[in-house]
Length: 227
Length: 73
Image 1 (tube, each protein chain N blue to C red):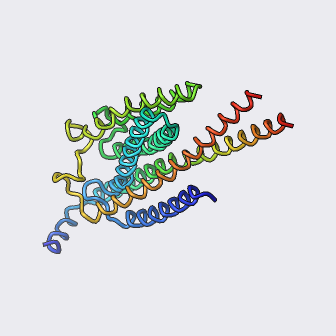
Image 2: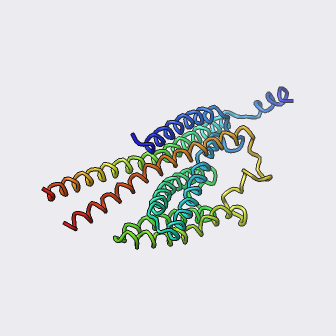
Image 3: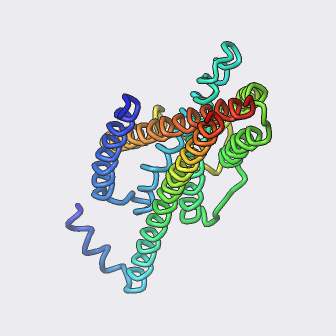
């Protein structure tokens, strides 16, 4: 077993233990006064959103580093973190939609936060489609890196939308004086955020292994063509 | 204060109100479970996709290696 495999298994185990602990604590919490039990969805909705946002920052950094160095390891990191971030963002959109159905009475509202998050998901999905469309590896990595930088423009818009605009989506309740989230609830949310990020790190490492395998296939094919 | 106001509050609540509140709570739990199931399902489906892709890549590497060894003979 390689060192990377050992790290993957150790991280996965730690994430599972932490998630089990968090789920147990969340299940024991009382319902919120106005919203009842559905409010507990915040303990997943916010952590998956934060994880997706971190993944997009990694993707941006890796894309910029690829354009500077032309090292394909950064391209692999960019695609791995984008794909994992896309899965987490999908979970965020779905949990948000179900929460909205109970509280707002509608599955979806075209307000700035929801729309910019959907646009973000579509942009990163477009990034993955773009990669499928280009055969030549250097051209694929370069175009994808440029597209990833372009797609990241939407991320600060998603983050700031509830601060800058009046939206159907509630305003920020964390890291702000306006929020009234109890301290012990905030701690559970933070731990769940940490667990989700560990899970995302595991998935990114697994996805990176796929990219290594793909590079090996590319070199084997070149050798096969040379014969 | 709570001990005094609670019986007064209970006296004002009709059985219909209780039923409505219970239905709201039940609906809340249902939606919460749907939301959590959907979120985990997305992540599980993604993990399954990763596993199946990895298997496919391993098979492809093995077949390419076998082909190259065959050509070298």
